[in-house]
Length: 424
Image (tube, rainbow, N blue to C red; front, side, top):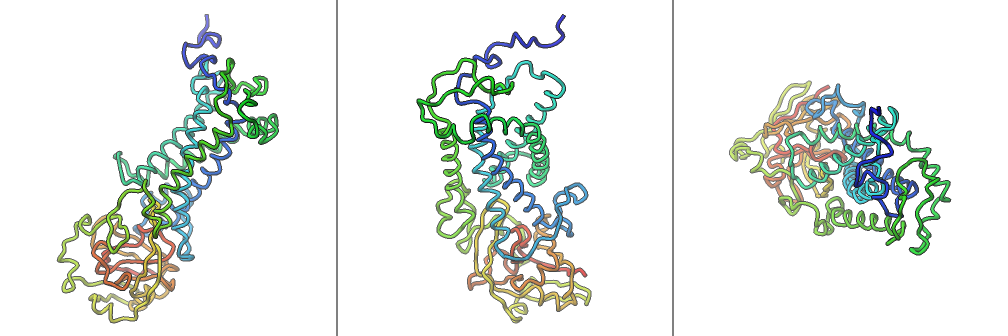
């Protein structure tokens, strides 16, 4: 009596090899798409972990993921060049978008494996299929939630940053397992087909890959149909999709006149002709708290505490710098900011040699407070900004005062600042 599925009697439909007839499928095409997809995924994963590092989660108030539960990616983040985070996060979002068509092409190229019969030929085969399920599931999860985050459409109840981080850990681990398992098959497919030779074939020369070269991969059709496009066409079609997606979004990352070409990007609120993530109204700060007669900046440090009205801060030495704000969603804007250097404020309370500064916003929310490290505090262009583009800060951009520093994500550039504590 047979105690498992009969390998010679698969269910009807997609479980039968005769169901899949495209002559293009095979180890070579899967390998070619996989190499291109791998390059994009490596860049996306690496820049994603760099974004986590830029949050400096080991500093007070910054950690969204508990420091003891994350991977050791809590090294210090440099304060220069000022465009560092804008470039890394722009790559993360735009390369991530570019991988979507190649992921879909890769899934199309291997879909017969989803219906492999029997589902598991051995314990080792079962482990391999589990790793593939984790890889595909985590890749789809990362791309879908990432796109929703860029669009500010949170159609889920979980914390995006936390879920995206752990999803990335699962993805990287399953990708490493998959590469170890599949590398011999990839090398064999490349060698059997003489590298890029299949790309040079015209439509009338396009033939199925030989069954004997497949080594039980289950991709080469047993009853192939006539080709309607070349393998070169498959890659070109996916590449065109990638170019289109990036072209309709990259203006958000580059900014300037190209921002109007970012048709896939959400129409964020604007003030002073550049975007904001959260408006003053959305912060729910009472208007009276930011009035000149009411607002004061409190400074604390080893040398004691002091407080200043906005007029007193305007009477201090002012410094002007052209700096970008770059946000995790991938958008960047560069403006001209004027205010008091953070290192000058630190000196007023004995914090010149501080290890960090803890910044508290009038907005009593977790993202309204956080820390900057000492190197950032001492950077030439690290400011408590009071004006932008020659005018007083608009309410939506942090009036009466906000943090503007080089190289860090926008979430660390606190608006509506109320208190700063310099820690030695």
